[in-house]
Image (cartoon, rainbow, N blue to C red; front, top):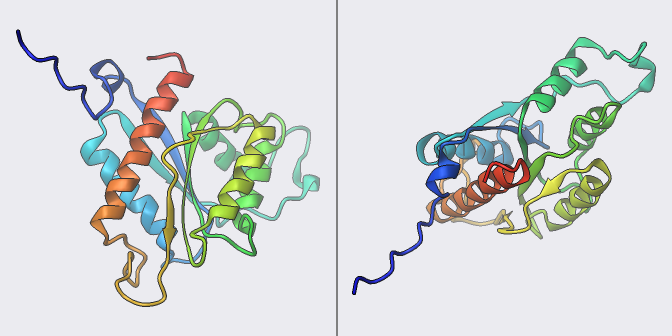
Length: 207
């Protein structure tokens, strides 16, 4: 009698045939941010190893501070309309952000708030969180974003969690330009992306 086949570690073939668009948002505006590096690594991983997952980096640096006076007859300034439309068109969200004062960074919170203005463009989308930060690795800000997501109807994957602790001394996980240089961390990031891919399709009823 033949032994039962070993289940595949990647998504099932039915899921692999489906395509999803992921909007990747960085909570740091610093060019050398390791969180930007995580997004670059995610784009490389998805294009090489996860068929059907397309990740687009969404720049939030040009968004003005939230001010509802900028809303006129249900419309927004062009840069805000463009940002909202990119979120509206995606299937899921990848947040990569450091932690500021035990919480969400100002730029990221500002972007979340603009997206939440009516109609809420975050609603009913799958999402994942990764963070690179000193100390806790960004645990507190991730939990805060999860709380925000409850109100916005964002649905986060529960596992795996991803917290990249930035060491003060070598060996570093990212180089001076923020690029991810640690193979083990790259494997963990791939696991997050695979989970987001599968959960997005489940949420959409495609698998």
